Length: 358
Length: 252
Image (cartoon, rainbow over all chains, first blue to last red; front, side, top):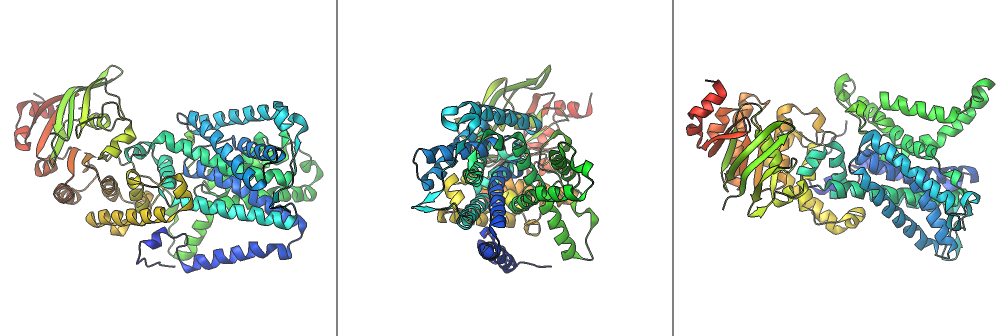
């Protein structure tokens, strides 16, 4: 077991607690930076896709895992980010400007969507955000002059200072870089008053108010930030699919996003990455399973969403803190072996405030 | 001038008049206690002051400012901190984070500086961290510092809640039954803490309390209530022997 002797307040502010963490995260950074040397085109694309999911996941994690507000409407922010970015590009706005503009636009929409959230929690909020997602989808389908309606629109290549980032290697680094920045920004947020206000609202609204936290403003800020990160992922997503059409962003996309943060582990940024890996691997696993299992099982209609739903339910019941929560427990078990007490996590509660856990 | 002044406060829930025409003042530097049988409306008064409840009539002024219509988060900014009867801590977080959250009212950074963690944000964090440590020192919470609230014993939670309120660096501290669930030893410690808070930090304390020993030890003035109305206000011994108070507690 490791004991960290703290001799300085700076140690409580640092991102990495001790050299062990620095070593392992450094190794991970090195591995993802050098990955293009060994991986082929297909896997680079898959990894870039995974990073895009993770960026969106950071956004949803801030909202669900840290502020305790559920959203089933995040596919809409992904779509708004993607469409806004693509439209700006077609209008001749350079890539480096278009990405922040589209992100900011999503933040504004997010702030507005956050307003009705002030009076809702749990299942009601989930349904309200679902309604928002449907409205956004309807607008995208019918605002043909901007979005191309059902025919969709082609996304221009990402050009930075006359250099195309469309190749697999530059695009991989672009996604990796933005994921890195997103995680860093989220980490900064969580070690400063803004992020702590989110946590306060999640754990006790009454107490948060008596600590001088403005509930309305905090919730709207959480929505805006969450939408901004998801919209940022949307801008990259548009380049990944190359051609935007309404059916790229459905309710199932929202559910996948939620699945990602719940399975990954609510209330942890590592969980976002675990969730993204899980979500990236799951369709492959299902495809492989289809080949292996008897044919009639593979042909069941709605198999994929069914499996997604089943996994979500299993995690909510048996491991509300997701893969990250499980990992923390396993690590503690090894740390304390053979003294681990079974009851250590008896009192854990879930962050998702639905009627069941209340 | 009184620190907190409330006049003719009334509130009812449905047909129940929880508080009726209660007036009181809290003077700077004193310990003011509210006592009374269950359901007398003591906590309701605190909730009115914290602005969780809307008063049907009457008004309140704090430090010369009218707070009758202020939003709840403004109350903390003005310098009123409170604790809750059944502790309302941020369950999933460590004691340290709980105390840091209380520094929210002192924040000088905004969203952008927080996102980028600019030098100003870092300086502010270190400053908050140092001030939190002062409160941890004062209330002897060192051993709990890094522990998550979920695993703390009840007595420790009570103290953490008081510590969190102190981190707001308030002018007035509202303690809602601080001794409930504490054993006699802890209650005795509590009376020392309260005296320290008043004497060393210069914070005025108003508390709702059932333990008459504690009330008699620390209070300067006591207000007794029953059925939402004020019975009597005065110094502790006077109130303990007041015929109306005895009748409210013991019956005729």
